[in-house]
Length: 138
Image (cartoon, helix red, strand yellow):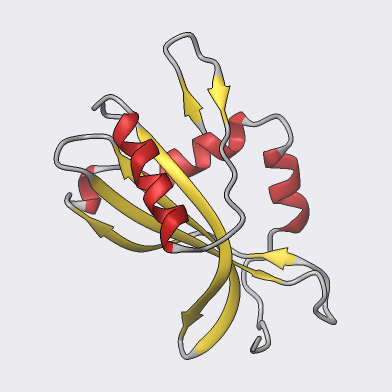
């Protein structure tokens, strides 16, 4: 999603994980003016936590400073095709690069962004689980 100075937002969707897709994403990020704002690229895939492979939504955030700073948040979830009901658990900061994570409120920015969307807070409350034992997915 790109937001211009007037507040108009533009979403770009890529549905193939290829080198060409990542090159296009990098080119889009390079078009953005340096600022203290974040650009976020989301993807759906897997994450390994404590030797368990879990379904997860991955958010790669890029602080639009020079040099570029980045972080990754993962949100593990129980897949809708699982025998147990769909649910997700708390976001976890998986990595960061180029800045002291203690100096930037990444978790707070996530929460504020989620809660600013009219339906997101309701959906989050409906499907969040404090924790869950997700089975291995292959």
